[in-house]
Length: 145
Image (tube, rainbow, N blue to C red; front, side, top):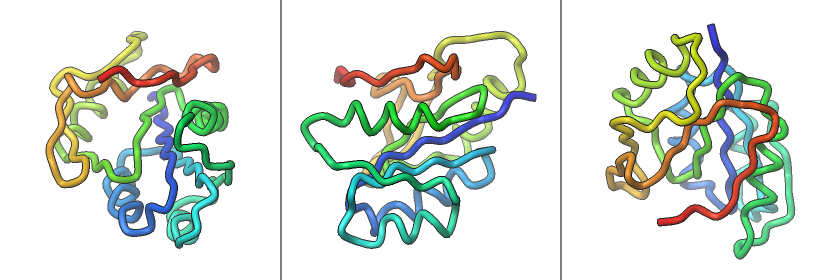
């Protein structure tokens, strides 16, 4: 069975990160948190869920290096990239488990029927494609909205 790494990049998300981590707890084989030099308790809270908390310099105008650093630490066959204010719904957990994790075939993106919550609102696959096969060469470049 394939393994899923969840990569979360966060800066001063102490009020959000616990709920994000709770939402992926039963889904992720590995959780990686990139703490972008937070001045709150983001890192402390994250360490209650994973030993894989890495600190990086924060640059809000260029998040690519932080995300890419997190991807480089992922060891799973699949990577789910999240922000700390996102939550994975039970429906999305089921879809990821059934489609990406359960299938031996290689697919490049999984986003069909994607539903998650971001800042208290529900988002769908038209918002972002979040699950990517870990080829070891995955990089993040600015999302186009």
